[in-house]
Length: 207
Image (cartoon, rainbow, N blue to C red; front, side, top):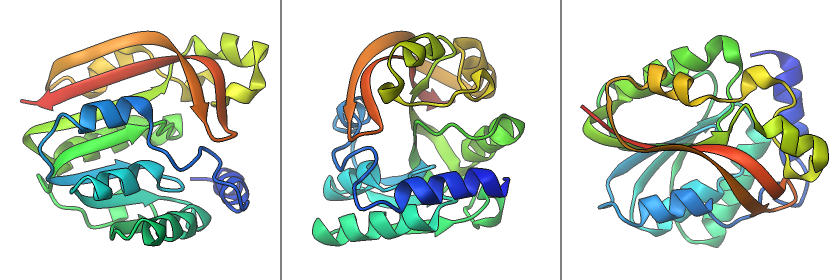
C-alpha cells in the first residue's frame, strides 16, 4: 500500500477524538450478538470499536490494520474496557495467520485498495474455518451520490474503492448467503460517518 494511504489513516486516527466513535457498528453488533463466541478476526479495524465490543462479548479477538495510530487508540479503548485482544500492523499476507484459524471474520468498512482487495478477501476466506461466518458492511458504489449531498457521511471518493453486490458474490462464491443486500442506512458513528448512506450488508457461512 502507498505511503499516502498510510499517512491519511495515521493522520485521521492520530486525533484525540475517535473518528468513528467508540460504539460498535449497528449491523456488526446485531449479527455478532446472535453467534456463539469463538475466535474472530477484524480486518482494517482502525481504532478498535468493533473489536473491543467483540472482546467484551466473550470472543477471542484478533485484528489488523496498517495504521499504528489506529492500534494505539484500540489498545487504549481495550484497556478502558478491561479486555485483551491481539492487534497487528502490516500487510495481511505477512501477519502469520493460519488456514482455518478463525470461527468468524468481520469486515466493517474495510475499503482495501482495489488492486489488493480481492486478494485480501481470498486470504481471509482461507483463514476462516468451514462453517465459519463472515460479517460485512461497507459503502456501495451508489454511495457517492449521498456523499456529494452530505460529505459528513464519509466513505471513499473513488468508486473503485466501493462495492457492488456482484463483487461480493464473486469474492465469496464458496459461501452460503445468509444475507446479501444493498440498502440505505442512517449512520451516526463518531464524526466520520454521519448521515444517510448506501451500504452493502453481507453475512455468509463458509461451505
